[in-house]
Length: 396
Image 1 (cartoon, rainbow, N blue to C red):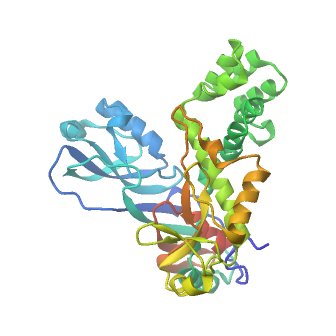
Image 2 (tube, rainbow, N blue to C red):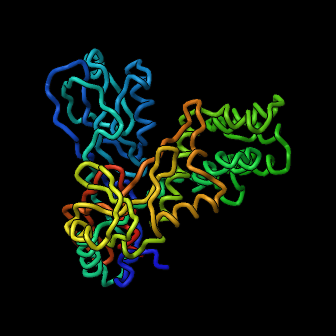
Image 3 (cartoon, rainbow, N blue to C red):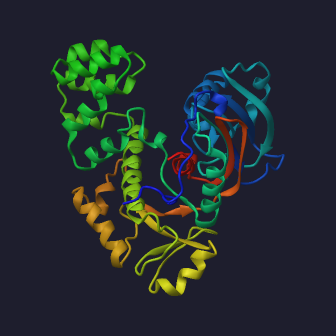
């Protein structure tokens, strides 16, 4: 089974994110600011700062609560990024004295509504690849041409799976009610941890030494410390798990959806631009879905990039396909001892599910080479899609 849509084309090799400027992301706003209203939109540039850290700085500096601040999407910390943030307009006078670390407010404008998650058209990327092979430029040009024609595999990015790459595992353990294993996984595998104190805490936990684990954990690891505190207080593993912040648990559950989606996507490679009878197709214009009774009849709409086949982000409201695609979806649930209702956890943790296209369009791709061993790539993708999907195909 191929792991690439462009499997027949050799890659460029190389790496990225050696420097913050190697990976640049700029949001493409969904709508312009009106110039009037109770919300102030800040066009912000930040370097080496996550969106979560940006929100924390703004809360401290403007004396706001996080719920007062709006944003359209989360941006990587290991990058130079530009994104829109909304704050209450009443805070405008405080901006003059606001001090932010590695963050610059480029401009601000008034608007009538608070910015909401998903209120962006997409993202524009500029990425430098270093230590590429001598044939990198023509190879990248050929790969980008094919991706523009056939679409980019709509994989989830590596950042979706956390610093140890285990967010999806944690989500599945929650869904499978394996709470003791969840606690062990959350503290981490000592062999994967670089931080000495964290590594010592993880080792102590695996040896059953909870007090020692709590003493060793870095103070900044508040969630892990909370989990251990609950266990030390005699609470069961299930209770300790659900004592964690809801947004953190939702992140794990969402990661489990993402990983299962990626597995279904890989099964369809390299034919993400070919329909099968029983597929559920997604219209790129508005996200509407419909069942495909006859794949041959609908294929011209695929070729025109009007529609694409999809796979589920599993959940109680997710539609399952028919035919061979539906068989694959049901088998994957069974293999993981799950049903669609497994994600119906209540208490603010239910993940309803939806269909996600298996491919997305690649817009305005360019590539240039200023040095023999480096490439500069530029392109844009729709919201919810990851640049690492393009890099995966190019670098191989």
